[in-house]
Image 1 (cartoon, helix red, strand yellow):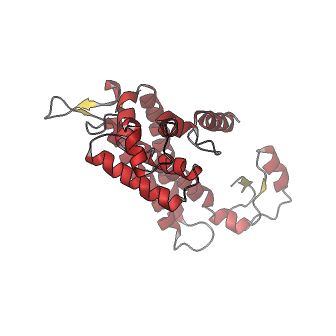
Image 2: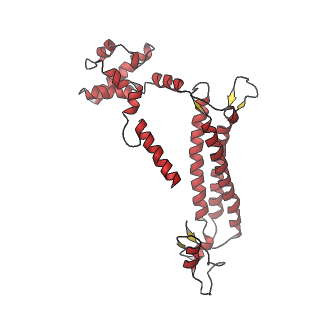
Image 3: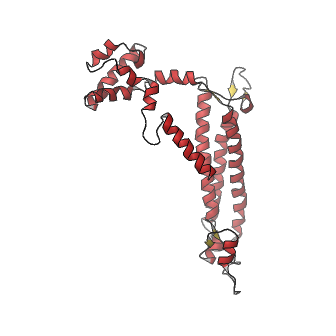
Length: 269
C-alpha cells in the first residue's frame, strides 16, 4: 500500500523529466507505484483498509456479543456501568447493554462499506472512472465508525465489573475439569480411551446426584477406578487446571501476562 502515485498524471504519466523516486522518498513512501496506468485505476489501498476495518469490527462485534450474554440474568458474569446501558422501556428491573449492542450492529455498517467498494470496482475498465468518487464516502465512513466504536468500547470495558464468584460457580457446574480428571488417570498409566470412558461415568454420577467433581468423596472415585487417590483433588482444582495450561498462548497467568506484554509492545511500536 505504501507506494506513491504522484507523477502518474491523468492516465499515462508525463513527457517531463520528473523524478518519481525523489518525490516518493520526500513524501515518506517506500517507492513510486510501479505501473502508472494501474496507479490511476488502483483502489486496492481503499479495499485493504476496508477489510482491515471490517476485521476490527468483526472482532469487536464478537466481543460485544460475549458482553451482552454475560450481562444477562442467565449468565450474570458482568455488570455494565449505567453510563453505557439504559433501563428497559417496559421492565423496571432490566438494564440493557445498549452500547455493546450498538457496536455489534455497527459492524454491519463497516461490512457494507467494504462491499460498496468491491461492487463499485468490479466492472470498471482500467484507469480512472467517475464511479470511483464513490470510494470516499465508504472509506471515510468505515474509519469514522471504527474510531468511534473503539473509543466507546474501551471506555465501557474500563467501567465493566466482572463478577468472579458467579464465573467460578458456573465453571464448577460446567465440569470443565473433567479432562484433567481423565489426564490424571492417564498419568497413572491408564489408556486415555478408558480414562475418557470412566471420567464420563463419574460426571454422569455427579449430574445425577447434583454434585461436582471437587466435592465428590474419594470412595466414589475409587468405585470407578482404584487408581484414584487423594491427590486427584489437586489435579481437578479449577485454579490448578488453568495454571497447568502452560503451552505458549495458553490461559495460565504467566502465559496471559506474556501475551499482554506482546500486544503492548506491538501497540507502542
